[in-house]
Image 1 (tube, rainbow, N blue to C red):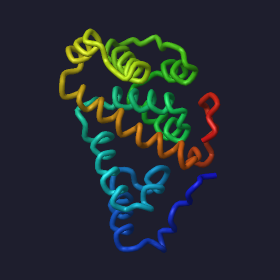
Image 2 (tube, helix red, strand yellow):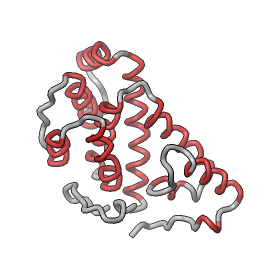
Image 3 (tube, helix red, strand yellow):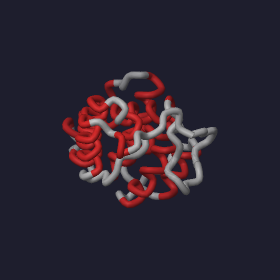
Image 4 (cartoon, rainbow, N blue to C red):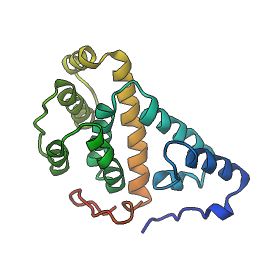
Length: 186
């Protein structure tokens, strides 16, 4: 049970209604999960959803790498909602079930593609050391380019916000989804 209930769409004020309608009519096709929490603060919801829309739909990263980063963030935070919401997108984008299972289980995946292995190493180093060493930075920049590297950091930051929201407000996984992450309570 979430610590903060979604606002009934019939009880939205004008500012909330404008943000709700913008989100619901866009590619997300609905207001749920962390977005429903943010709607309590419509200006936050508006700005955050705009950043999220860029990170999810408009960044220079191919969906395969973007979804890999999102799955790594969900696993890092044990954010079950994020994991469950993005697993189908990750598979559709070309990540293998073996890779996702390894990430879920905390094992090093056997990546077939160098860019995926480098993104994984980047995310791990960023979380473990709160920094990126020069060698990894140079390798990843050579592999995916500067623009995609900048967008990767944006995706990591946005999905940190998403994951923190999920964890603090105990946003449950989508209805009908069995939790997969270890020790995940929400």
